[in-house]
Length: 316
Image (cartoon, rainbow, N blue to C red; front, side, top):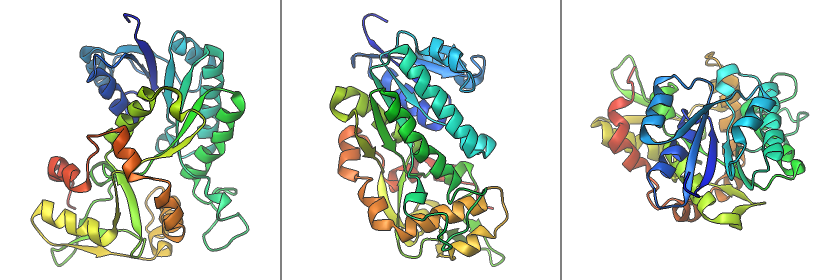
């Protein structure tokens, strides 16, 4: 790798990891090389990363030994888990534990762990403001990541905890875009009243992570929150309307209504939006826009993201 520091990226073919891989490859004089870790080195996305210049290796987050081998010789690593593949917080915690142990065994000098708040610190299980899910979680896809923070800290691996934000890409891939009603009009549903939702282009998460790695040890032992913008549901609806060339109304349903929608994960997401609404000041404050832009000067606004992606949003 010509003396460059190798950054290993778990989930390299996904949204966050792919952004980091491309950020490193886009900066050939930045002093870093990238090792893309994926379960399937023969997938189209993995082959494309290899074509762009990444070293592509296979490893599975279920296999601590294989992951340790894949990390050997690397300077640092980016770790992310895949809740929506299996809907299991226990699996997320187990995978994070394997990553932390493998990082320790491989002697990594800097790890970025893509995490979220453990909402039970704000809403204990005994608090009936929102339902307890799966027996011991309030927001399962948040809580397990937040619980795993201590696994990295206690392992002694030099770690930056990276608090991410709502992907605007969810409007394309996760069914969260505007829906067309029986009257033909478009409605964007966000159950947060008039509170602001920190959001970001998924690609920019990886590009902010690259800024952290480039900063050397400055962010080791720190928690860094990132976002592209903080916007209300009404502001997002207005921006969507401008980009789509037709009026989009904001539907601010209560979280309890959102929880009843019945799609897989609806209760989890309803609780998530309620948490972001009820603790909005703290949630937004930790996701500092100025810091995010300092890490990634090309950070996209929602309007900029829409300019590139609005045509891809399915309007059902």
